[in-house]
Length: 140
Image (cartoon, rainbow, N blue to C red):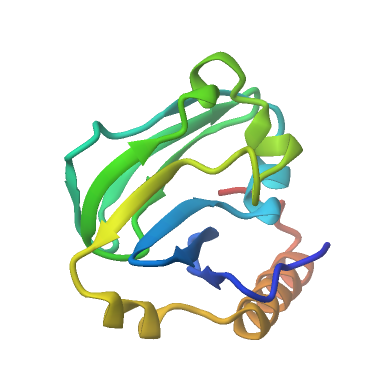
């Protein structure tokens, strides 16, 4: 599994990409693979304020429904309109066309608390080791 090096990550499997004074947020390939075929994505309204670690929506698949958590605090300035008609974009291209929302960060320094690609890769290895050791299926 390829982990884009330029992104920031959470232990809840969201990613964040800095674009100027805005950030783009989505879920990782790992999360999308664990969910299976995504059939519905519920996102916040433009101008909603999200809190770091707070829920901002739900992603539903044929296997499960999972809350989405905001990596940082900020105001929603856009959501991906394509996900309403094509939620499968989350599976097909989670780091590109499957993006979920665009946020204006309240405090960009909060990004310092997020995982680098290297740290996220190590986190995934820890999760996988735990699952193998205890015979668990990895699901969100």
